[in-house]
Image: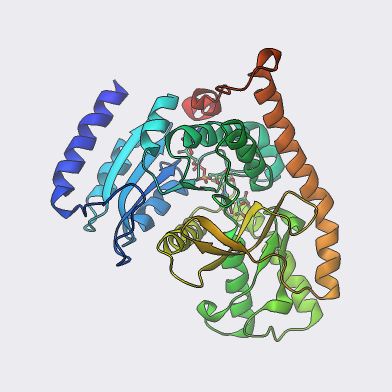
Length: 380
Ligand SMILES: NC(=O)c1ccc[n+]([C@@H]2O[C@H](COP(=O)([O-])OP(=O)(O)OC[C@H]3O[C@@H](n4cnc5c(N)ncnc54)[C@H](O)[C@@H]3O)[C@@H](O)[C@H]2O)c1
Ligand SMILES: O=C(O)C[C@H](O)C(=O)O
């Protein structure tokens, strides 16, 4: 029934927009002009982040197809977005069947995932692990099947654990490319720019600062020594602003008092990050953003660092920026927590993957059902 409604509206939306569609020359072609040429799929498009993110992406001139997916009903969101007068085509797939997800992903160049449960006041991000690990599993398996060359960017918390889980399932599918998997940490950079600009009384758009580590509390490490323009505050200001950046998610969570976590600033940060990925796909030189990725910058398997983006995702991991003694100490202090986060993700995935290969036969299809990861959404 859902599938039918979904298909009908899709046809209608396509028909309405058909005159504006730019012909793509092939799945991975680039027309050399940097114009609208990419398909982006938003998984979790009906949520607090998903909706404003989709609205911002509808305005992105590099995107010619914007496909929305959610386990909940998003027919109305898709219809609403489709009336915005940009020539980006809007398509949607909803429902808890894994097939809906797979269908939404075909030919995607970028898949961005704001799907999953947000924190409630008093919770840590780690406490979302049980609810959201299934999202990482379902989405990475579906990407592995439908669009293994897509750039896959997770917003879902806890990022520190979700990305390692996704990597394990992509490996199980035989399609893991460390240059194409990202944990979106750009909100930490956005916040750092804003708070520093406020302090220095300058335009936030002029501030550049790397934020490394992970995306939870002390694992978020803004590198003030590399701030441009040079940070003018004292050590105590660095300490205070660092703590504010690390706890900014909780600041929003508490201000919303039970009505969710950051959505609008996250949508902005994710739209910005997706745009950077697309500029990289367009082979624009000098596209540099921080994200949480597979890494050999430290002894840990994943770390957020500045990355140069290119036609295949990460062109070059720029590794650790220069650190002063305080920053080096803070990095060493955060590594054990981050290591635990990563190990928990790897062992969650290993249990499922091992169970899917009885008698150690080569793995065919780990049991990655979106139905399981979405139970909470159905009960909402
Ligand atoms: N990385 C970051 O910096 C950052 C910032 C803010 C929020 N987040 C995280 O983003 C996630 C989403 O937050 P939100 O406020 O938008 O939550 P929300 O509850 O408003 O929206 C989540 C959406 O995901 C959908 N969904 C759930 N499981 C799904 C699945 N398996 N497939 C497809 N859709 C699914 C739900 O139906 C819902 O529409 C949370 O985990 C939150 O903690 C991360
Ligand atoms: O704080 C949260 O739970 C959401 C997000 O990770 C944030 O930093 O705002």
